[in-house]
Image (cartoon, rainbow, N blue to C red; front, side):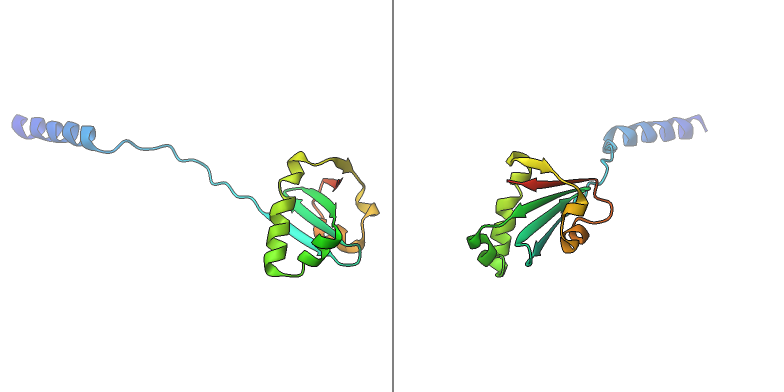
Amino acid sequence: MKFVVILAALIAVSYETTAPQATTHESNEAASIFFYYDYLTHKMALRYGRTCYIFTLTDQQRTQVHTDAGIKALELTLLPLIDSGHKTLVQKSSLSTDLQRACGRNTTLIYTMS
């Protein structure tokens, strides 16, 4: 009987030392970025989280926005500007109705970018 208990203990210790270490679980992360072109004002809204950025597009960008490749290139151009561009805080009521909708109901900060 002692032999069985000792053998079971040795097997348990042996298994414990060869079993892989349990890793800590990281939390999931998610982010979404939304772009909207307002053809009436020729402005592009970029919503990231609860912040909305409004860009006035150049004539070239206004043409570019109407093709798949063009809008993707434009989005990639505008995205870094939210960190490096000049921001002016504005009120939601100063935006067109379509841009207000694009910025969303839960937006807390709205900036025009230059």
